Length: 368
Ligand SMILES: *Cc1c(COP(=O)(O)O)cnc(C)c1O
Image (cartoon, rainbow, N blue to C red; front, top):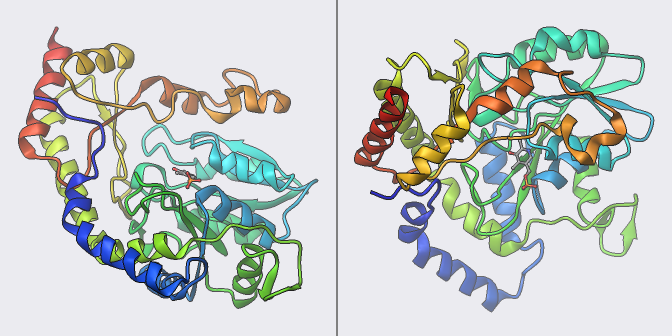
């Protein structure tokens, strides 16, 4: 049996004719940039995220970058980020000229350790950027409490958690302004690049909306020095079709994750991402932890099972961040996570027989 790490066929095949019809309508209508499909999607996605406003942008990194820019975060400022995250979170901060200040992860949930945030705050701190890793939200109640205490902004990076909740409040609705990604592999992905900003604040909304389009709301009238980062009409129309299925796909992910738990829970050498009692995960990824991770990955590859490590090298140890002079061992939990995580295949359309095969293979490995 062959199990690819990721496959979009199950999601895309039944929607393909609808996609083609949508694209065809856009070709006939000629509204390729900021057409009505974009505002339709923004209205729907804002409502999905329980926020008043949503702004479609070019990708997830831009969603975060424009959010920071909209808050006027700039050179000389510090932004608290998780040590354990995809590097885009850090790069967004760097791109506006601010400095990412890492905070280590919890060993169990692998999300930012909210108890360590306070000691990372300085007079230069302007914002906290929590990331909901692998589909499970951070303790946002605690993040908002510390942010309010120090008068800091919160920007959720919810690229991995569209539809997840904490205390029944959805990802992308907690922070002052938040960013997500529609990279094809996310829980809802475009057929190319895309991203979105969410907020309840009308002035942040207006400013972000200008920012993504050359700093302009009225053509050739430029209020601020903006960028060009727009979700295009074709991607928006495809996302419109996909959004109505997102809850079903997330439920399917949850069902598959529960199968994994059921079949692997008795293996002592394997640990899972602990679920916080108040969090509902949408399992962007199904991540296990095991000491001899590299050997397991190799073993599964021989069995034609695709796996990926999210992420093998934390941002603070990347050559790109050598200027910040972080030392190996500085964020020990994050480094331990990097050395032990392995993401197993999990996507709508993955079959129980495939999960059986994956789990049997893992069990064989742990017994050998
Ligand atoms: C995917 C991802 C991003 C970046 O999204 P792009 O659309 O690829 O720019 C940012 N943060 C996290 C946590 C992600 O997983």
